[in-house]
Length: 358
Image 1 (tube, helix red, strand yellow):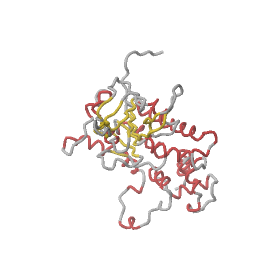
Image 2: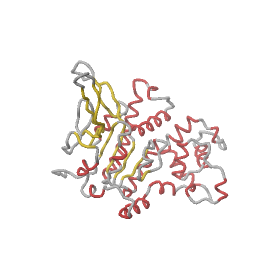
Image 3: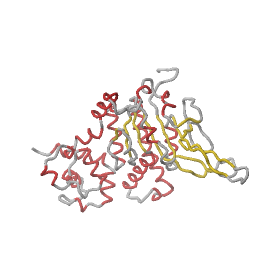
């Protein structure tokens, strides 16, 4: 048995949540060499490296696996945001079981299935942490009524905008739960006794409070300015020194060269013939994936799969007769089997591809 003693330096698991527009994505962009998986398209105005926006849960998991196989691609993986990623998960499990929503299962089992699937995502992210890569979740906040079992009455508090069984998983998993909000003061006029709010500067809270969820394992002050430098010392040694935003000058040449070389979107698209330079005659042709759902089309492009190969595997598995046009496939079959079970279908596509005689 191997025993250790003392603090163990490790990459950090951080979750920053707060109301919309407060600067969660900007805060995350200050982490060392971040790579964004932008599930909601909120980083368009930021100068950051990002993957293609995932249109399905399967695609999101593939992007995380890509980072695992290429650990030099970044020092921080940012999933922006957790609640939009959760919605991809909801669509995934509902499509696989042909349900309209989580309430379709009896006894609240839909929320249990969601928590189990989202837990698998967190397990994947643990592998990223083991490689020395920080993982940052951003998330929106919502106000909910809260009632303690041993107290009378209820009160409002800020919580992660996640489902009731998913939020506890994220809170337990993270090293830091940071709640960002606007600091306001209520001033009472002595003459009229009317009240008005003043202030509004941005702060983040690092410890639990009856009005919000927060925690940290680094003895941070309860309230800090919403500035990455306030937590930079919590990262593994050497990372905090390299977290400055690249400027327009040639001081960022080395980092920019590394980002261009390792940009995941370029690597993923390089596997697809559609990313190669096209001639004028090719540009005039119609998109070969036109009419296919975006979720499936994104997976096909990312993995270099053709429409013929999709039809081939479908007939091989006996789902539809050989030669059945794709437009005749049931949309629920496409969402539940071709997209929802892509991890099972894609290896079969590769096997059938290898068996094609040349």
